[in-house]
Every structure is written in structure tokens, then in C-alpha cells.
Amino acid sequence: MSDPRLTPANGRVACETLRGTVAADTYVNGAARQVSVPVADLLRAPNGPRDRQLLLGEGVRLLEEHSGWAFVQASKDGYCGYVHGSQIEPPSAPTHWINAPSSQAYEAANFKSRDLMPLSFGSNITVLEMHARFAETAHGFVPRQHICGVGDVERGPSQVARLFLGTPYLWGGNSRFGIDCSGLVQAALLACGMDCAGDSDQQESSLGRDATGNPKAGDLLFWKGHVAMLADNKTLIHANAHHMAVVLEGLDVAVARIAAQGDGEITRHVRF
Figure 1: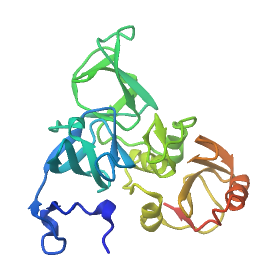
Figure 2: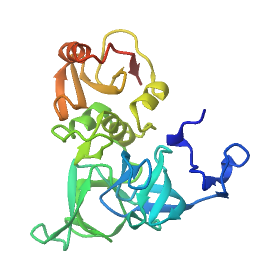
Figure 3: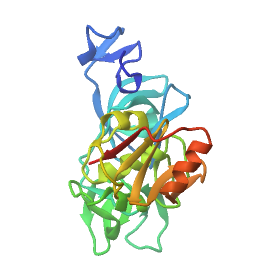
């Protein structure tokens, strides 16, 4: 059975590539769009629960607009769901992305000017003009220290994950303003140029190779419904509901705590 999270179909409409395999009233190729707000919740249904989030400038394929809602498929991982139609716009080619934990778009090329929009790590922007200390975009002026070029990648997932320390835990979250365990792993891997699915079960079945030997920085450990990254051979970095934040936690302490709370033993150890 197809995973509905990755199947661009909702009964009324389906992607043209699914013709003959998925029933729908209409089949479409879809249209390119991008997210126009700092963070958009990707919902399971209109006004339904949040499954994941999309960041400013991220690309989506628009499959349907219906009653103010847009049914979309995320370019970064194929995840399907609904965003409000006001949260997407025609695409512009991103030139840079935010590689600071978070940033702001300002009204003018002056840090004392009014802030217009918060920006999370991983947001995509299109720079219109470079100024001495700021990059001018359609959303405002962004500090040049907080951006790097599209195509530039970070060197280590565990170093990226550390940028999120202290971020509040948010189920389905994908931003510096709130993130969950799989969102943290995805943000770290995508920043290093590595493909990564959105949810922990998808990550467990698709990422890396089974590790042998002692844990090392950058390895992933999976439990049923949870994923954590090794910051070093004795320490995890993970977003978790016990601490309600992204934290560093001793590996042995975390393994014992997770087992004690009824979530079982490690199900997979992954290395890249």
C-alpha cells in the first residue's frame, strides 16, 4: 500500500504520474510554487493536524486549490499535505539560504531598523542586491553574516544539529522556532547536502547503512517513534518531549530513560 504521506493524491486530484494506479477525478502535472511565510504548517487535511512544516522559500508542487487550501507536495522530501493558499506564491530562483540558527529581515540595511520577518535556519531567499552588511530581498534586508549561497553545504550534521540546542520541542516542527526529533535530523542532513525523509520511520528505513563498532559523532540511533544523533561517542543531541527542547544527553542515560518510559530498545544504528 502506498504511503499517503508521499502519495500526491487526495481523491479529487492526483499527480499525472499516478494515472492508472490511483483513482481520482482529475489528474494534473501540478505547478511550481514556493512558501511565502517564515513557517507554514503542512497539514494532514484542511484545518487538520500538523504533520510537518515548510520554511520560507521552500519549493512545493501545487496540485489543487480548493476552498482556500492548497494541496501540495514538498520538493525537499516528497511529503504531501495542505497549506493555506495565502502561504504560497509563484517561485523565484533562490540564491542563498539562512545558515545561522535564526535571523531577521529588516526594513532597511540597518540593524536598528524595524524587523519585518523572523527567518529560521534553512530558509531560502532570493537576493536582489548586496549591500555592505546586508543582502536585500523581497522580504527585507538580511544580515550577510547569516547567509550562504545555494549549493554551499555544511560539513558535519552533528555540528549543524548543535545550532538548534535550546530550540523548543514541537511535534511536526521543522524550524529553529520549534522542532521535533526527525525535523532536527532532516535539517542537519539537508544542510550537509544529504537527502532525508521527513518522519523518523521513513528515515529509519531509508538512511545510511547499519553501523558496526562503537558509536561516533553523526551516527543516528532509532527507537520506535524516535531518532537521535550522536554528538560524540558518549552524547546524544536530540529533540525530545521529555526535555521539551533540543538537548545534549548522555547516551547511557538516554537509553535507560527511554527504556524505562516504555519506548523500548534501540531498533537501528545508522552510519553514513
